[in-house]
Figure 1: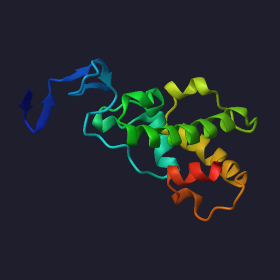
Figure 2: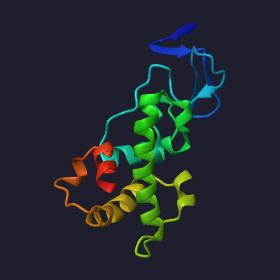
Figure 3: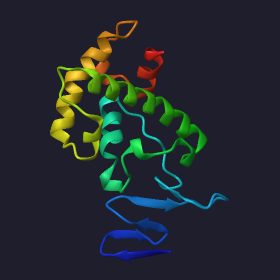
Figure 4: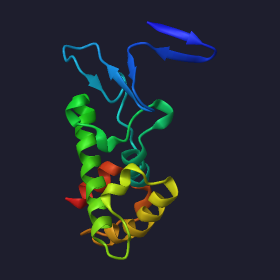
Length: 151
């Protein structure tokens, strides 16, 4: 059931326990999901996807993707999620092990967008330089294509 207030639609099937929501799907699995049932995993550049892993999609009340479990998504989205997760974890691992970048994975819960941009801008060129094949315009490459280049 939807209730309308001004121009905002509030879905009463959504559990709102924090700034993020949990969603119930109309399927046999009786559990909260991190995204609405008809939601599609986004196609995005590596930077944009990593931003979603750190911050989620606040305007849609979707939590940071790093908190997702692939099993909570539909099969196609789960496949793309696992690829994006692999790339994100690869970048985070490189950032946390690079002594020139003062970054600790524990900071992800409190990092600001400006701080995250600095971490990403410092580590991403190093990740790209380590790829087996040179990549033109790595900042514009999709997360799935980047995943393929890492393998």
